[in-house]
Length: 350
Image (tube, rainbow, N blue to C red):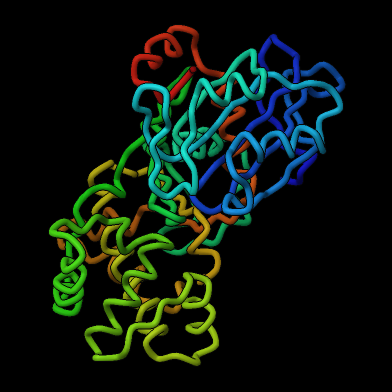
């Protein structure tokens, strides 16, 4: 789907909207406008990706985008962001700055601000993007009706479940990345012991994320008695792709295998008969290594449930606008009573 071709159901309010997908590393911002022919669709005429670390705040990023791309004042914002809300703040330890709900509203002069979990937003985009170009990693090419699990290792690990319904799909945001990491091999047990030196509890996203790739690389170097060497996730992946660093190769290999095992657990936990979509910024970078890894072997290695998982399509999708399309879709299609109910939880309409 091209920048100007994204389409979704549009609300009765035909004012333009800014949709934002904010993660720990990048903020993806889009201007959303109704289709010129008056149809119940929307278009994305402008889209931009920004490095969060290059700006002092989220307000500064949105102001930059609005000043550059919006011809008129845009006073509605649909914000997809990882984290949770306590009082007035969105809490996300991966962000380089705090996010204040009232600060956003006041500084940007917003008439309406709605906040949704980033992977909940991504799940809302599932029915509105073409997955034909996605890479099939496991299972049949055909999908069946049933819950769809979307998982993405990025700065952290996000996950959501989309449950199809006759009138409106139900999307469940999860905190799967905050669950405790379970090892499934002697090497993983040894690595977990090494990782526990930094804290008694090791989370899934402490290994299965961009940050986790760095943690895993450090643990593998320690097990081999190699001196500490701090590399970025991109550098680790690049070294593994170039076959220039045996410990980087081992790191990515362990990452893919461990991810396959945990994904199989999540598929069984959430009953993802409708398939699994893998998103996020980490996996597309290591795609050739993922395809050659033990990912599928470990995904299917669930004893009596192997046959059920073998019938579950697993696809890798690389769609930059997934989050902003999902945020806009969620914003325009949310029921009014759901908005009121979710306000108490914080991570919704604000």
